[in-house]
Length: 159
Image (cartoon, rainbow, N blue to C red; front, side, top):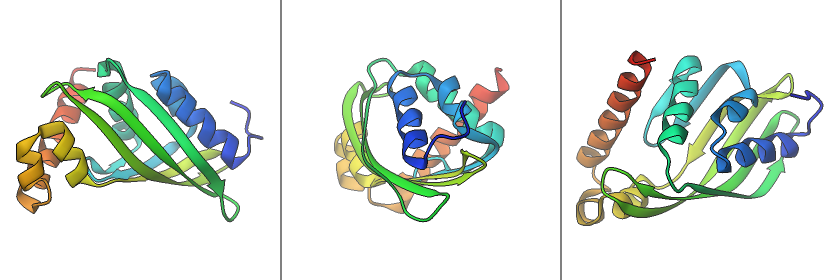
């Protein structure tokens, strides 16, 4: 990848690959050493991050990803808004998840990536009534996180 991409161009490339379910292209936007955080998987590093994107995108059937308001503040930092629309495979329910992403860049690639979205809103769509009623509680959020981490571990052990 061309290291002369601007922050905005790199973020746009990342989400273009995301929309095409091109996890290898997404990983090409990352530094070798990467840290990632989101409300579901929480803190991941390096091989975990790479495996997460491969797992999510190879299993996605009808994913559509939109990105907007891509900006960079200081040199080496950028952010955007995103919207992911897909069917949650465990329940067959349609999800429209909206969030923000924050990036730190180093040597022309992403070294830190943090996604922020409402886990309660996500669980309300993905899980239906249990998510609506209990998605805001630490108990259900912990269960969601545990299941996601277990899925990632299983995926990584099968590679």
